[in-house]
Amino acid sequence: MKQIKLKVTYIQIFFLLSIFVTFLPNGLIYASGKAAQIVRMMYLVQFFIYSVTIFLCAKKSLRLIKAPVIGFMVWGIILLLVTINYTRDLMKVFRAAVYLLGVLTIFLIVSYMFSYQSKKVFLMIYRIFTVFSFFNLATVILAPNGLFSYGWQGATYWFGGKFITFYMYYIWLCLYSIKRRNRNIIAFVLPLAAGIFVCTRIRCSTGIACICVTVLLIMGRKIVVRIKPWMLITIVLGITTVMIFSNVLFNNPMIQYFVVNVLHRSSVMTGRVEIYNAFLKIMRTDIWFGAGYDNAIVMQNTNLGYLNAQNGILDVITQTGLIGLIPFVYTIYAFLNVGYGYFNNIENQLAAIFLIGFFFCSFGEISFNAYFFFLLALVSGDLSKVVGKRLGLHVSLKTK
Image 1 (cartoon, helix red, strand yellow):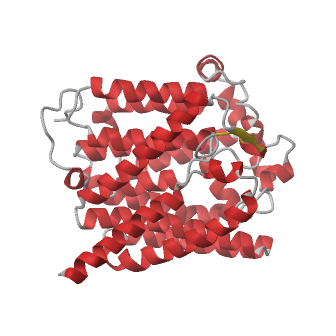
Image 2 (cartoon, rainbow, N blue to C red):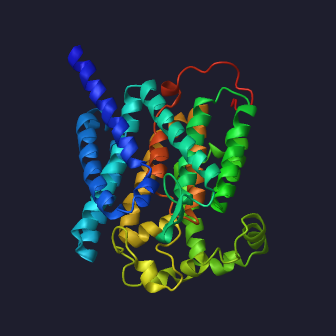
């Protein structure tokens, strides 16, 4: 028995370390003045922690998400091979490998939580994001223009630029909503208002729009939860396809009104429309296999100053082409398909709605990141068994 307890303790310690190094406050790294050296060291630390965590829990965690993980690993292999062939840069290949290990570790941690119906793991994740979000919020209040400005990232806060700052808070808001799902609407007003406040202070209009969409989805969740996985993926791919031919889309008066008067952006979405319209031309020689991890193909083929395609699906295509898009989309479908049977639970409904919020962000940002994959894994199991008993009445969130 002692040996089992020791093993569980080791797993929990490495879970904690894995979450920390995945979502670490990189704003401090860039502020140090020795960013390059520290980042290289952090990649080695991440590689070690991820490898140990995967070794400790892979056997017991994979049974719930075997199909999704296979899809992700196929996409990962394509990403590594394309990066090797396209760049011949071993450091970039190593960074890609660490990124893939990090996402795989997130999958396994969440799967372990579901396998053992571990409320402790859920609370550990929730408390970590609570602490992180508190520091983020304090930073935004005290330094709305950022702790400092770093290159292309611009205003940099505790955990990075404005989008990472928003994603951090959004994940906490999701976990808070799941944990407090037995409370009435008043318990959610303050966190939602704080989210709008954060996005306003850091000038993240995408975040404001995402929170508003999330609130609307929660209000109409009885309809939202009926959307099957293949329907959601079809909608995302369909909208992305339309955006490639976005001259027609953004000439629509309703779309222009929303972009200009609600998001307070230019009618061409601050240069994004030009990227979307030129995308097929940019990718003319790399459309099938892409240009590998962390490529600069958009910047090299445009003079708009953007490092990437400013769209989640299009960014995947720039990395692994249309061939790589297939296993990537399959991974998303497989996770949603595994979790679809639990969508009758209020906890899973909320997680799915926040995940849809990330899909919404992906239309104008690169939101298919560690935060997205965490939410994707979160919808794949029965959250009602790891959050704990529901106390009191479901005043505003009750679903028949």
